[in-house]
Structures are given as structure tokens and as C-alpha cells.
Length: 371
Image 1 (cartoon, helix red, strand yellow):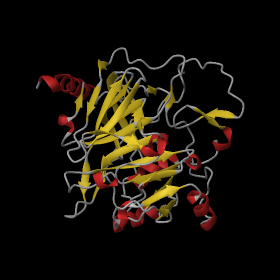
Image 2 (cartoon, helix red, strand yellow):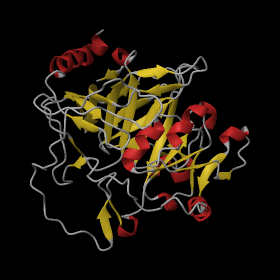
Image 3 (spheres, helix red, strand yellow):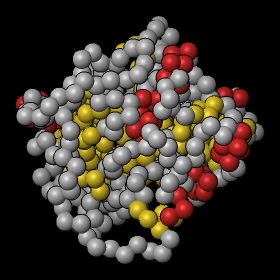
Image 4 (spheres, one colour):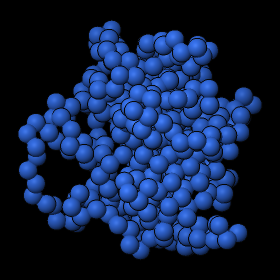
């Protein structure tokens, strides 16, 4: 009980203000162009205030560089118009070690099946994918991923999926490559041998000219995140101390530990550090951690499910630099970005760097440890 006291107090505080967040603004219905909706009659808290209240700092970009829209880090200007890819990465223990994940910009982790102790899967967003020699292993996609990837205009890279994905794949704003990547002989069963290797994306674009490498008509029209200046990072001075995030993912045992020296949260699972042999065995690390409390709908007895990711004013946390604050999140449609707000109703500002986004089921949210 002592271990979870802070989390319980924060949850009670959040519950008291959820009815306030978004009041006084026009509501919109959350929509998805699919055969079924993940939430009935979901309303949003209206159009967000897109004005940046912080005074923008004058800075001179290094020659040939620009700030990435995914991390705010300086990257090559040649990548400015290039769409990110969203790679489905198997997270079964047999799939380890993962390759290339330390070079990803944003990683989503979410339950992939209601069976097998609610095993999770990664959706890995990468802007500069040509710089990664090996990424994966690649596995099948689920409906939820085809509702989240469009808010980034990302090209989904996967290997098939259940028939539930078919309607989603037919949406005009969903682009994907399936089963068109390289096989690596690693001594494992075939389902654990597919990776995105150097040259695979170039080959895919050549073989399917209908998919744009660059941002297309469904590209975001506004910044996905509000980033703080690197000279004035977000400190969350009013937040609680947070050096441990113990996620209630029974199968994987996912955990994030704060490393004060690097100012990042180091990821572990299955009782071990998550290391990347493709990058000098670096441990997977994140500057920002965002957790979203979310309900889900089970589709059949085989464990297939869909997250109710179209919702308004739901609970969550933003965690950075050893501190955590309760937040709310809203997503109105497949193409609309997910907006994260503090308890005053203001969109949060996050720090420059990589971001971990975890979907935590509402029926295990009370088991989440943030301390």
C-alpha cells in the first residue's frame, strides 16, 4: 500500500478535475472511418490553443540541419519532408534481442493480445530509417496501430495481421508495406526472422510507386508535440519524484528506471536491461515517458482486441527528468493527433529527445507504479 500511495493520491486528484478539463469549449465527436467505432459518442474538449505562450528563442540552425518534428533534435535537412515509418516489432521473449530500437524516435508499447498474460508489442516510429542497418524483428499489425500511425502520416511496416485489419488498411490515409522485408538467419523460427535492413525501404518504394516517401495530403497540419527550448528544459517542479515506472504488463515485466546522469529513463523487460546489439549494446532510453489509461474491446476468444484510442479527457501521466505529473489525453479521429494536457487544461510541453508512450489498460491502471 505504501508503494502505491502517491499514485492513488494523484489518481484521486485527477478524477476530481477530469470534469473541468475542456469545459467552456465546443465539443467534437471522435470519429474513425472504420466498420466499428472504439468509443460510442466520444466528445473532445474542443480545438486546442495552438499559440505558443513561451517566447521563442532565436537560434541559428547548424548548416544543413533542422529540428526533428518527432524529437526536436537536430537532424539532416534532407529528411525534412520524409515521412516516418511505424514498424511493428515483436516483443515475445523469443524475439529478443531487438535490433535498431535505440535509433527510434518514438516507441509505443501496448497489449497486443488478451491471451498470453496480455503480452505487449512495440510500434516503433523512425524518421531516419535509412541510417539503421537492421530494425526489428517485424511482426503483424493490429487495428489500433492503423488508427495511431495516421496521426504521424507514418508508413506502417508489418507482416500481415488478422482479418480485422482489412477495413483499416482500406482507409485512404493508411499506407503500409507488408511482408516485404529481409529474412535473417538467426536460428529462430521463421516468424522471428524478418527485419528491415538497409535498402529494404528503397526497394519497397520502387515496387510500390503509389506510396509517397514524403509527406502527402494527409500530413499533419500542426506540430504534434510542443517542445521546450533545450536551454530551458521542462522540470515539472510541481510534480512528484519519479525514478521508477513499473508497468502492469504481466508477461513482459516492462520497467523504466531513471538514470540521473543521462537524464533518461532506461527500459528493461523480462527481468533484464533492454540492449541493442546493433548499436554497441546500448540500453533503450527515453527522455520523455507518456502513459495513457485506456479501455479496450475484445474482438473474439482468440485474444484479438482493439484499444479505445479515440476518446476525450482520459487519464495519464507525463514523466521527465525524475518527475511526474498527472495529465489528460484526447484523440478525436484517426488523423487527429493525440493531445496531452495538464490538469489546468493547457497542452503540456515536453523535452527534446526520444519518447516512450505506453497504453495501460484501465482494468490494471491501479497496479501501475509511478514513484
